[in-house]
Amino acid sequence: MKINVLDSNIFSNPLIILLLLLLIFGTIVVVVILLRKYAKPFKNNDKPKSEKEIAEEEMKRILEPVDDEETLKAMDKFEEKKTVQKSGTKTEKKKPEIKALTEEEAAEDAISRLVRPVEDEDVKKAMEDEFKETQEDEDK
Image 1 (tube, one colour):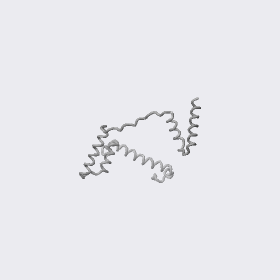
Image 2 (cartoon, rainbow, N blue to C red; image 1 turned 90 degrees about the vertical axis):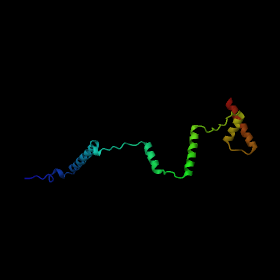
Image 3 (cartoon, helix red, strand yellow; image 1 turned 60 degrees about the horizontal axis):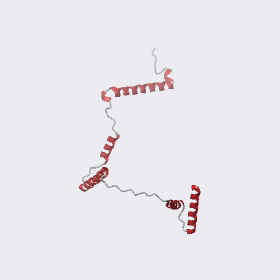
Image 4 (cartoon, one colour; image 1 turned 180 degrees about the vertical axis):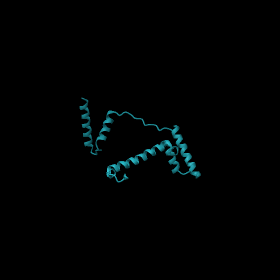
């Protein structure tokens, strides 16, 4: 009497079928990994490229060579200016001198920054007097 394995009660359980599928595909994955690691025809010899190499390849792919002589001359002039600026032979701008303010100038500056310009002279005078009084009170 022959026993048919596929007709048995074990394979009617869905969990067993799932486990068998996982086992079959898992063994395929392990075999592929081992083949790629140890078999010479399946080895990957490509080395990862640095970001600089990737950028250079991308620039070569995007940029087109320049054939026009006028454009080449303009590019050369630009490169010369660029190297002159980097080397430091360019004349440096002088920094403006900063002078110290007197107390009166500082008070006028503070008033002008704190309030809008006042067109009425009486109000402006009153504000300046009040500011001076508060300064005197703070000094005491």
